[in-house]
Length: 455
Image (cartoon, rainbow, N blue to C red; front, top):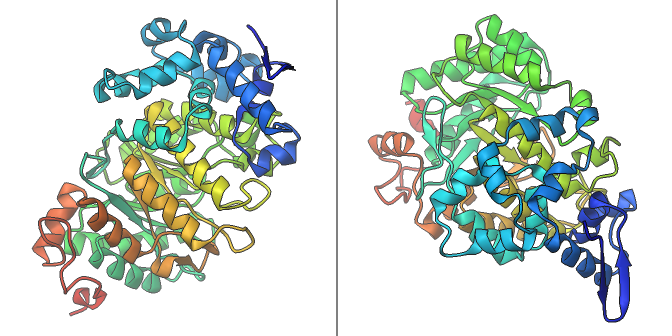
């Protein structure tokens, strides 16, 4: 492998693939915190040049975290389609970028190629893409999944309804769900983050929501986002969950801290299949985001963007129903400002879809960062153009329990109108039956009034 290049009479040398990947990254607070970022713009350009000349095989067979030391590395490799990988291994990363963006490369070819690459390869090609490249490339790829209903079809845009409560009050949560549904929010799922992580509380939240869904025939999925082991215990005690949720990361060390591994996720899938409320086949829900490994000191010296791509290589093994990216959620130590957040979200969305995942996005922010609502909305609009499967729906865009900002019920309806998108088909038909939306996906005057479910 050639790890040197000369620009304007200056020779730049890199110590290995992790060094090239880190220094080729666009500016990120997490990389600066680790001390692995490029020192100058020229060094960053030099790293991109070197990276563009490495091959798919170079990056696949020299992972950033050694194979014998790390389960995430092994699962990335185990998830490869070897025929597809062998057909692409001699392409340079520059050639791979051209192939992805070419009009001659069909959406079906891109979709089928997802299991030909590891996270390191996805990160490498994204690092030499512009923002428009990332949007255009991702817009060519569509991944549909089925749990109780199907999401991700072209021409649709879905949302998770997330009216969390600071006290886990089922009545308050239910009222929030009622309002969200009338805005067309909830076709991806009704997903509640609990304050108290125990099985009894998980079931206490899920039971009335499931009863409401059955009473009104709401065609969606239900999940309570406690720890995977808590949800598994709740399922064993009869909690009516559609699927199982868990945050995952890009190193084994970080996943160990999260209390999750490959075997546990396989067990969770089987439990959801045999005791959950849905047929599947997609029965898991993952959450990810750049910087999680850095924030807990489990990054193994690898840049946060590459670690995020490795996370996707790990997650695709389990064929999840949903993947939700929350780059921007942790804080300024990983994503400092709006520019970093927007770029990070565009990278993540492309990398996830490129590797075969059904990507939902939450370009979010917390009050102690330099990110603003304008930044967040610009990211959301760009990601909508790029074809994200779904976004969040938070009352008034302010999650009172998690203390962060995200897309509101109103934002969700606006995005559909801007892009001419509709909800997922079954949910769309259900909303039309209640005179909440028209055939185009535009809300009626009746929309936004959650009291219709109380009359």
